[in-house]
Amino acid sequence: TKIISFESSADETSVAIVEDGHVVLSNSVATQINSHQRFGGIVPEVASRHHIEWITRVLNDALKTADVKPNELDAVAVTYGPGLVGSLLVGLMGAKTFALAHNLPVIPVNHLAGHIAAANFNQSVQYPALALMVSGGHTELVLMRKENQFEVIGETRDDAAGESFDKVGRLLNLPYPAGKTIDEMAHRGQATIKFPTAMAHEDNYDFSFSGLKSAVINYVHHADQKGEQINQNDLATSFQNAVVDALIGRTKRALENFSVKSFILAGGVAANSQLREELTILLNDFSETIFIPVPIRYTGDNAAMIGAAGYWNYKQKIFADLDLNTDPGLDFDLLQL
Ligand code: ATP
Ligand code: MG
Ligand code: FE
Image 1 (tube, rainbow, N blue to C red):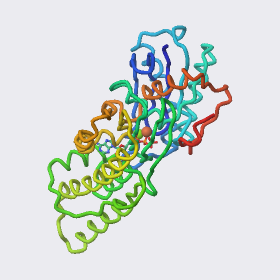
Image 2: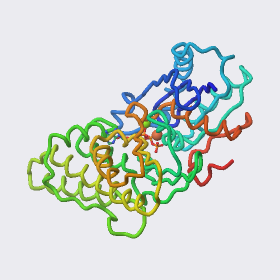
Image 3: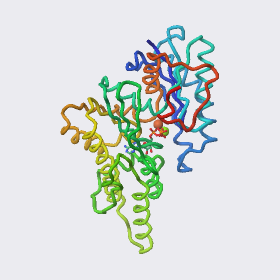
Image 4: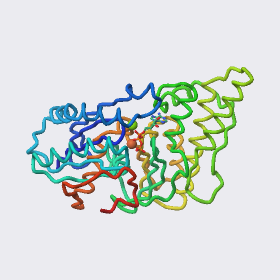
């Protein structure tokens, strides 16, 4: 089964062709990060215009790279939420137009399910599975009792993990998005500053990163006022330790209480080296559970992951009509159509 997939929920315009949900025949991604960097975040109007400029080129590139003709395809998968409405609309229109032109069914895909489904590019997921979904807009522990079924057992009450990296990056005048840069700086620093690990003792699976963000802001402002030079690498190490500690703590608790066959690490922050290392160590204590981090090249937004999740829906015959609309606030509880 060959599925062509469209992703345009934020600032990546992407089209991919994926076979049987795990063989990536092509994955063409155009990123617009450079256009947003001087604003320190995504500017929605700018983002939608870029998607319009790029979508046809990305589509042609994906077909050419995979060396697949439209009549060899079985379906068109598309992200319809969550994300920026103007951005989502471009991918959705592209997907529907392609589907209409080539008489193919449309598969609606939740972007977050896509992030998780990308674990299948590493190895086949066994169920029940637990996923830590850490991205720019979301931080969730998701229990999957079976394939394509999602139960959010814990989530952030304020900022997402990736968002906290990006906000600290902005404070330190690092280019947006700052996750990768902070990750690299953290390797060069020492954990000299004690920041709070939020919610470590609470009896649930939720996260909170705004207290940590405030502590970092206070630390920097305090040093500024006293005219002291801060060591940015030490700050990066100390901050990243606090984020990873919080993620590890909640994950450990969930793994203890739900015995799962697979543990998936997904979303843009899944590229974080310290998080991957510490989870590898943690999972050594859970011998029944295989650790399946999404391969680094598929952790950020891309259409291949939408093709992987699209295949789950395809097998369950979850298709949409051509009047499918975007759902910018879509989450897992709304996934059932
Ligand atoms: P969502 O998926 O919730 O809609 P999004 O699509 O914008 O949000 P992703 O593209 O999945 O988010 O992830 C982007 C985030 O990942 C950014 O916040 C970025 O800073 C972060 N990130 C990328 N690499 C790393 C890294 N090595 N360490 C920490 N964070 C990282
Ligand atoms: Mg992105
Ligand atoms: Fe994403």
